[in-house]
Structure formats: C-alpha cells, structure tokens
Length: 106
Image (cartoon, rainbow, N blue to C red; front, side, top):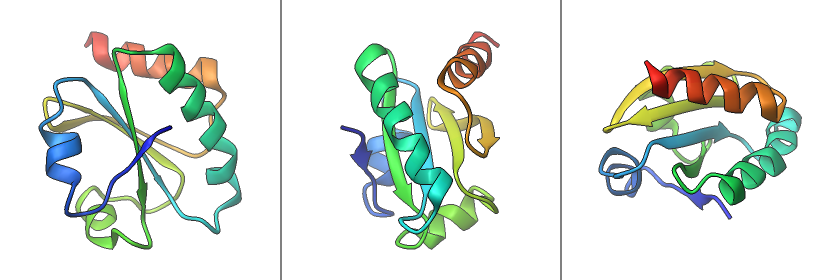
C-alpha cells in the first residue's frame, strides 16, 4: 500500500528517499483521485525501483501550495528530492508508466 505522507513526514519520505518517488496529490472527495488509487497500487507492486506516496491536499495544504498543485489528481515525480515531472488528471497505467520512465531517462 502507498505511504500516506503528511507535511511533517514529507522531507523524510520524499526528499531524502534513495529511490525516485511518485507522489499522488489527492483528496478524499475527488472521483478521479479514487480511480487512480488502484493504478498506483499496481505500480507499487510491479516497480520496486519506485516509491509511491499519497498526499492529501486537504490535510497538507502547505505541500499542495509549495508544489503548485492547482488541480487533482496531480502526480509529481521526485528524484533526489526535486520535482522532475508533473502530470495532472487521471491517466491510464501504461501512459503513466511511459511518462515516468521517460522523465527518469532524461
């Protein structure tokens, strides 16, 4: 299961991670956010080279603001503690994986 990350745990779980981190910015009331959850869980099971975290924008408004999250779901890819890519909206798993791999290859 993806790790639920609070503002307090963000530095430890995301910025200091030794793996690239896929952060799912979501809200409990967001329909497309609920639809992306099983996709993220599948990626988590298949890709040991990635860390998957979930960030509730209602509970971590400071993080949403810090990273410019204006719409949800927003998926941010962090590498070495820095955002290297963002995607907004629900995406099919093959598309998301391709985008992640392309961003990591740069």
